[in-house]
Image (cartoon, rainbow, N blue to C red):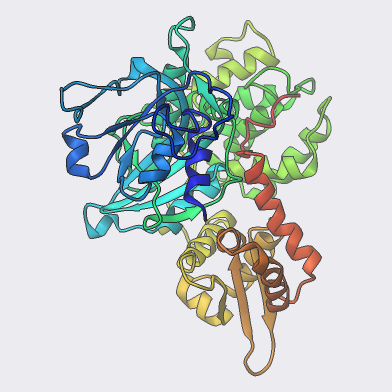
Length: 497
């Protein structure tokens, strides 16, 4: 690991290569470098608080002091100067002076034992996001994760600093996402002072995990407009009316009879119609298998049906337990878009009093398949941070731990393996039992293994789970490629026709 390479990767030509004066590295015959920006660096947190630092305009100056600074500004400014005669108090690190945005970063603050996390927790959350951090630093009271841009986003006056506004929105959405799961400092400046990468604080670094500003923007826009958030206090739940389930309502029948539904109307295409119909079944107490049977016939009769894999993914999402039901307003939009734009609420809904046809899990005799799946994945999460993420135990131990029937366990394990979420193998005889691992945990472990060891690691996984190396690689590379392409697979992403 070369610190200079890391600093260069983050700063992206923000600074000159050599000091303007008194350079010890600049070749005599080298061409004059063009105008670049400046950053600010501080030798301690106490100095940072008092703004006692240095203005740096070259990579050479960073190299000379790289392990003596504790904080810096990884996003570059147009200029930097000092506000005192002794040239100790820095000035110029203001938003309106930004030259280019090189990276987003997040502070994870551990203020109590309840907030205790590891860098592995950050990686685990990031793998679901689809954007991996380029760098994770260990700080006095937590961690700091850098998400370095593939190319800088330049701030120009003629654009009225719109880049800064957009970048700030992306940064805020990124913090909001991680804040759902981890202790994120939501108050620090989006483009201010951050921890500086040093030989003594780097916990994780992967130079290939950089993403374009456009990819971040595409992701961020979806965070603002998704009509089915996991938690939304003002969501109008419609899961039926008095004596009437949601699948018995007029709107459900109208959509079910419409075959000319395509994926061309932005966020109101066939995926969303299928998702809404599946939610109606879910909230009406219909089993997932019965819902799949009903909607499979509907899908087949569409002018442009979804593939089997995409169809099952949509239904599975509706039954994931993350959602209550669709909102009344959204159902109106779908019906106006695909059935008749003159439809009124009275044409779609029977009554105004809504309640949900679904008992809480604690009150039910049986659990849904998606609930058992979540239980298994939560069980495996306990092994994410271990040196070896593989679990060797017995089915009996898992059944007792999760209170899951034998037949249900077999069904869930097969489903999760088919979805490529787990590896598992059952070994009979002495020393046998069941071997399990989350594919996600395996990938997280793999990306932290040196490249020369990765081939052997693939072989170990294949041997442990009695699979071919080819199959093992395909499963793991499928997840890794999803990260490199920054695809956050969701209902709405594929709904483009």
